[in-house]
Image: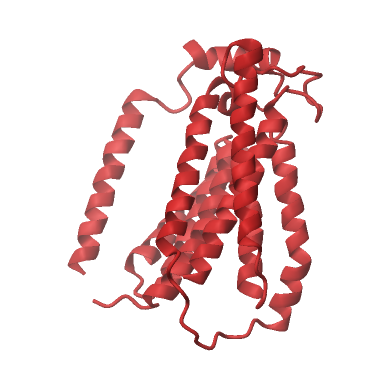
Length: 84
Length: 227
């Protein structure tokens, strides 16, 4: 059981790091916003593993749900591609 | 590219400071509870009747902080409404939502509302509470904003719900002040722990906060949609 959680933790950390790099390097802001939603989702799973279900439910609702929506509306106004 | 590297360095620096601070001061899983934290965990259920101790800390022991949070949220929503009030969307052809999106959201919307309601009604028993529940409800409305062409909640009703819930929250606090000489004191009977009708004023406050946060966040999203 413990090993399973450890294994899952490694996998999720990998997803977290990859999603962070996608957010960091992507020129397409839609991809960046969806990447940040993935970061929030994985973070909320981590909170659940660390036995903080209250924080996990808040992170999932705000980070993955509401923030994504607000950023999407902002993106609609500001344009989809980042210019260098 | 330079900008991205600078951003990475700044984030890395702050992350490193935070990590080193926490690693030195709070070794993982090794800190026995002391002081008020130990009191909350040992006496929380007995004193306030809520099985979810986080809830009794948020609404009762630290209830005044929560009132401040609610006020900050109210000010943020009002400020956003003020800022975006004059803006009108220029008419351009939007992509039609597909049939699948429209039908799915129509059937999902009541379920999302039900789930949000469940979270705030059971805030004192299970994880969650007024804030996440309000955000879940607002997310349901956001789904409708995206997928339905002519879905428009009444702005008047939203602000009325918000103001009414905020006033009720303060009235609940003043009730505690009048009956038990402490703002937001638990003046209602505690009941049997682990049942829905227990924990005194916690469910009442969470229902109020759920309505308030839900209408506020929906109002923010509606304003952003129109801007």
